[in-house]
Every structure is written in C-alpha cells, then in structure tokens.
Image (cartoon, rainbow, N blue to C red; front, top):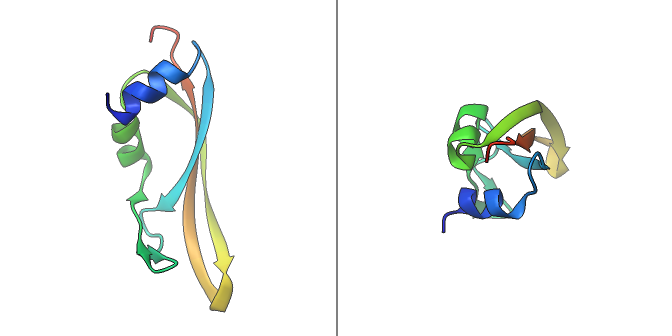
Length: 82
C-alpha cells in the first residue's frame, strides 16, 4: 500500500488534513540531513487523487544563525466520492 492509499483509508469521508513541507525554494538540508522540497503541484501529485485543496500558504521562517527557511503549508479535504 502506498502513502496516499494509507492516507485515503485513514481519513473519514470529507475528513481534513494539514501538511507542512519545505518549499521548493527552501533549505536543501536541515540539521545536516537532506530534505524533500515541494511546490503545490508536486504535493498534489504525491498525495494523489481524492483530495481537494482547501487553502495553502508559504512562510519565511527566520532560523538560527540569521538564515531563512521557506515552508509550504496546505490544508486538504478528502472528497466524498473516495
């Protein structure tokens, strides 16, 4: 079972979920580890069918050592047909 199928099975009909990721222009690493970066299109492809985007926004987070990390937040709702 893939991740999107697991999410689909875990949520009730018309259930909601919020996800936060590094934005497409975000950091390449965090705490020394490589990270995966997303824009809305890549996020939708990863999540798969059956979810409607309700709202999204970006944040420029001021990290320690005077650096900025860009994040993407998205609120999705499971379609009633899935």
